[in-house]
Length: 250
Image (cartoon, rainbow, N blue to C red):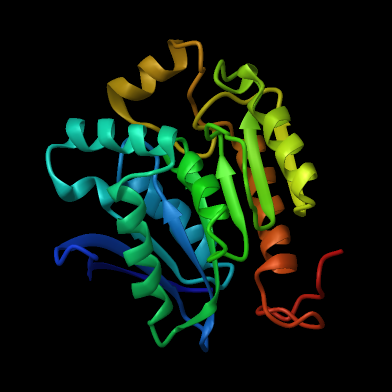
């Protein structure tokens, strides 16, 4: 399926405008859609690539650039605080982006999911609690004691020192306590950021750190397969048919 990728701007609740990247499949709408929350490096080519791969499966994908409010370092620090506390302006920006996406003619605003990476993985779990998303797919994000949850498909790297703090087990315990459908997998040969190729010096440093941050193709391919199957089961609308004509999962 061919896709188009366009830089956009969306209004925020405080009257400002923030940029973003909208990726649309060449398919009839309205369709279920995804709000994608990027990793700590922000809106880069790799995040665009992942968005294209998801859009090729039939879902419009919006990446809001919520770190564009000011100096990058300060915005990252504030976002990390929001992720840790569960409260902050970044959540307002993500909600503004969700509303903008839901209003698009290509999108069925009642069927929106979220996917997030690293920093964005933590935000994807925060969004899973809101009741506004049909499904959430956090990648190697910091987990929390969930008070509510939509269906969650989560992926971690076994060589990631952060994962070894017990994040996957903690997430499973929360989801089972809430009775939320879930698929949580730790890939033993993968580290942090196994879905993306971090270029340059940061990529080389990441491989040497305890988180072992680097792209791991077998894990990335399987994780993509899993989230697509999970989204087909929990995000797509009709229980007897799916957007690409394939039979339902499960």
